[in-house]
Length: 416
Ligand code: HGY
Ligand code: MN
Ligand code: MN
Image (tube, protein in one colour):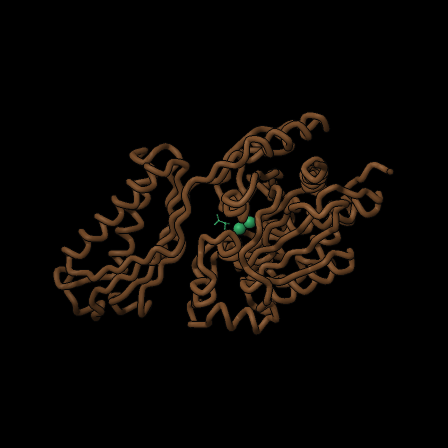
């Protein structure tokens, strides 16, 4: 039996092929980005391409009722599988690696095992989950959260995007309204390979990262009702400028994060700011903003959310109507120390430099952690690990290093 090896060129070809689907030219940089927003036609085409690759690899494929896709490689014995995967939906200004590396890396593991004619005791399964990004329907890790039972199927299927289109219908439109039970029976273990999407590993000069867990995430959509008025004739004292209220919320969030009051690693982002009607000579009567809070400490996250809620009440004393809707909320998640130990031992043995770190970004792995022993392998990225941006880049070596450790880890976990 030959030793299975990752074929880096084949992995890069698969990543490049998938990145063509939903490709767009970034006006400012001229770079090619990826826009495969969940359940759009591009996501459907990407899903179909990867599903075809699964079938060509001889895997048995199933699609569940929230559109999650699983592809199983038989093992010698019919035991719980070792699961690996990620997502292929992207943010609208995405890159070629976020999520895709985890799915195509797992496929490369299967291809390498087949080439080396390696059988494993346990089955190996690859998954890609629906709407990991949460950009379109407002809730991140949607498919994997349904798979583990954190979000009920009906609630997920009824979610609407900004134009009122419903998950249930959009799934059917792209042909991924599966029939398989959406609740995943616990795998033996779950391992995900993902780009770090940040600067830590590159700055530390490390080849790879062993991920210890994911920080807490809290998303809200805040609607502000003020009073629309003529920009020229309305004295400042008579205004209820919803755009100004949005700016005050943004400033409060920033102060909460940089003050250290909620810990040194609190992060706050107002990614969406939409005053209406958004015209030069009209005081905005309405505004819709998004709130993204992150904190590695659950108690500090709760305290920060309370602070923000109080601030929104303050705005009401100034005559605004403010309605905040929680759209995503996940606690800090710790990954399995056993699976981390396997990953670290493989990195050690292969001679890679590595460090342990917590993930700043959310991942499907954080949902899987409630179902089975779970951990992640991080690959560094260039340009400070920029992500959710067409400049996202992990070099072929960085990708192959991570996927080769994914291979070794899956092999060990699949051998009883
Ligand atoms: O938002 C996140 O952390 C992830 O990219 N979904
Ligand atoms: Mn991702
Ligand atoms: Mn992402």
